[in-house]
Length: 293
Image (spheres, rainbow, N blue to C red):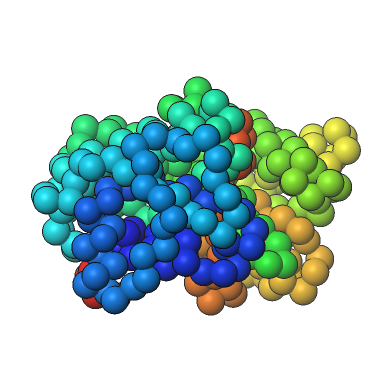
């Protein structure tokens, strides 16, 4: 459903008021999508390379001409994965050369990327590799606060192995630095516990005592405003009520489930650590409704 989202997004007056927009994609595919979905064609110009100037309220399309004939909405294919990968590669090149100020990505099916020969865990990892970034992290951002993930697309079994003091310290430093640069002040960070009720004094698990609390103490020595571990069943409500600016979750779904419930699917993914701003939608490609408007 990437083409539908792109067409609707760049036609939205709110987006046009905040940025000069450039879309990378296949012109034939986008025109076909616009016709089928009865959407307005929003682009003032179509080019094959980055134009010298992009005016406000006049989105520009950089057409790749690489997938329209082979792509069927809702179906996985190597062609779709290749087209997505090439769009990302082009966008990262523009971002790293400062031709654009930031990058926004739509939903991408990881299996399509895999069929195209991309072995990265997801398009965030793909973008990081293309930009030469080795230290990066994922934030889910809602209006009131953000949630950072200690680990993302790994199994629960592997995620638990990553709940280690050093990794927690590194994640806290990364997200704290990003927040200071974007928000202009030190964030109040709440660190989620791993076990029910925070482990209940190690009766329900020892990670809080062995790994999480020492990591918090370490970063507090460096000036971070970190608190915890806070029981996971309450920390997100506390953040929503204003106690924390940022929550560090210890695995993917510990952040994603409450954020999606609290945000009503209006959260935004932000990647910290890249040499440019990168945001993305928080939902998947919705293959079951792709092409249906």
